[in-house]
Image 1 (tube, rainbow, N blue to C red):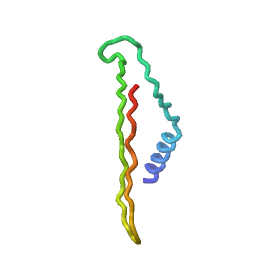
Image 2: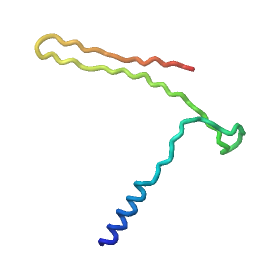
Image 3: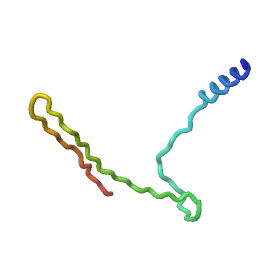
Image 4: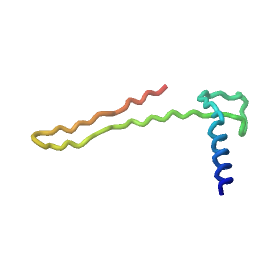
Length: 75
């Protein structure tokens, strides 16, 4: 039992110290067309979001407001 626990912590330590791979967001292909040749499609997604709230009057009048309406910019 103790040996298994020691091996488990040793493996977890080695895995935890491993250098993570760098993430790249560049979109680069070889330029050669074909099935599974590395062609990429970039689809821009725009989602306008409205944030609205409900007002609760405790002492007097309350005003509920609404902000939002993101502008969709197409390039």
